[in-house]
Image 1 (tube, one colour):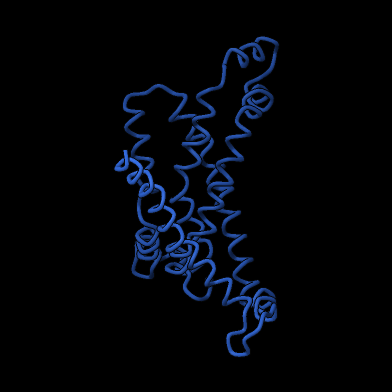
Image 2 (spheres, helix red, strand yellow; image 1 turned 135 degrees about the vertical axis):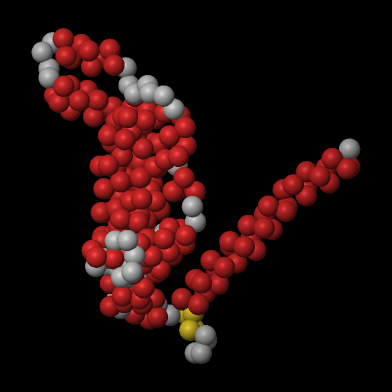
Length: 219
């Protein structure tokens, strides 16, 4: 009985120590350095306020929001038709192609950044587009990286739609576009917002892609 209590104690205390050492301690250290003036030994907001209001911080914040918003919007927009193809149409090997579609997401962000940097470089296959180091190239890389997320989330919602409701709308005289806008799209709306939110979070934290493809001019 004592042995089981010991195992229970270890199973609880080890995750707590791991969390405290590798998450809580670094966060508290950052907060301490941000709000405490080490040289003068006092509590201050001056450094935090000056950092938030600095040009470099506001510029980086603007780039982060802009790139993440555009990449998330394009990923959802392109993911809608692909979600229908891969989750609503029955064709040979559709499950295999679903898995193939997920390959970009499992690649390390640094690998994706280096691959697209080589692709858009002057001696790359798309070097003639002159997009090396541009914001547009970063957005393309992020769409490539996160498109499968939009397809997976939206496709799951699309797969659960009861098409008998769509058939009723068509029988009452609604054309295909009107039936999609009034029946299918409202059912997909939670999936669209979920996909957009998740992709926006991924894009906003993909610092390595931005740093590799844009360098200091963007990051």
